[in-house]
Length: 209
Image (cartoon, rainbow, N blue to C red; front, side, top):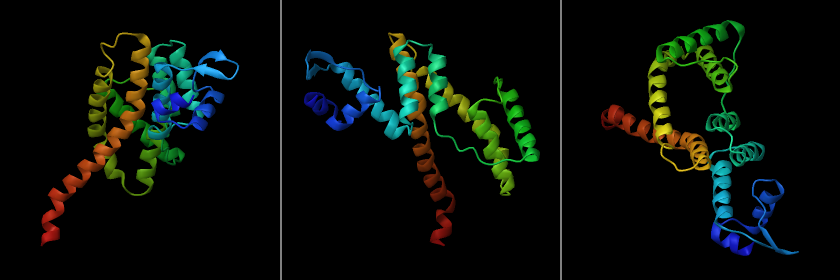
């Protein structure tokens, strides 16, 4: 296990914890107190750390995702599990604003040709955020929803291109999950960078004046 720790950069105590939690498959037993670990354990440790630390998923969510990957579930099903585990800002809603938000989401989905299930967690989260924007008096941001949806469509296409051509179902599923979970972190970071630069271009002259 010490060698696995050196190869993965994960502390021995953390590796033992992951083993207890079912996030890492046991090594090949070589003696009552010794086990042999291979490259598959190193890869799994890196995946677990990425999902936990960068993706922000819970131990339970990561365990569920890994179980689905190891069971060779369909990529679509595993992605659904991964999305379900992602933290979402759900906002707040009352009945009146909720109906308004649902209608707005349905309009955008119809324009893009999206199938929509109102019970899906991402849909409920979007409805809640739109309601919060309206309650705060910032409904103008909702006017940009079509622009956001167009960008999301392009990103989703890019996400799928990320896994096309991979050799095995396991690698496709794992890459799709990584792209979904860590792709959110990439998107947030890029948006912050873009906002800083656009703000500098638009308002830089005001500061100099």
